[in-house]
Image (cartoon, rainbow, N blue to C red):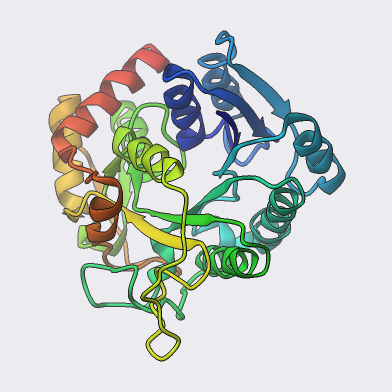
Length: 335
């Protein structure tokens, strides 16, 4: 199989590419290598892939519709796994245009390229952020998600709606994956685990929002990738039981599906910090702060649909995942 993986120099993208390559697939990895965070880190991730004979890199921006058209025309992809996006809730408060360009215009360009070049399955990253103001736990893909609390979340909800329209109009099979707080080796430096580790090792205080009472369904990268690859292998199909009288948001009369990929075990932020302190052998100095705009107090994934349809449920405990991250972080930075 030939895959296009967008965001290939990203955290989830690099691990997904490596998983596909290890099982013998051909992968074209696309990335624009933007400077939202360290370009060197992105290049170092790519270096984990570039020596593999089944991998080729395409340096391209999602807003370059002509460039995408040329790439799709020459490569004829079987499956597209679209992970590229402008990430981050807090950054969306100050840089909204970056989210419009990448997450809306770029997403539309990739969708259109998939349609025109008859891609067999379009799999894309959504986010647990789409649950927004929802408070019923655990978050289920069968709930309505019409109240986002950040522009980032709104663009991810928009992606799901755009995908559905293409599934309906052009019979393009699409599967959206709502990721829950991904962490692990080669992670993002704007995420809490990296920021905390960096600060603790440097002897600086860490900023703990909502005074540490937030809960997150921290999901280890290997579990995320397993979910991505398994759902990519299961081409979305129409649900024969779907009814417009009682419309199920997770399925459709069109070849469309949405799944949560989360650990199904929310962890309080203070417990994450304690686990990290244990792995580092250092205590953190905590700067307790109020909730930030755009944040939600808790996330918790219902993964029943994922387990039923692809036979997989994330299960890596936070202690094991944090230990692996710390081991990688020390090695990567020589600390």
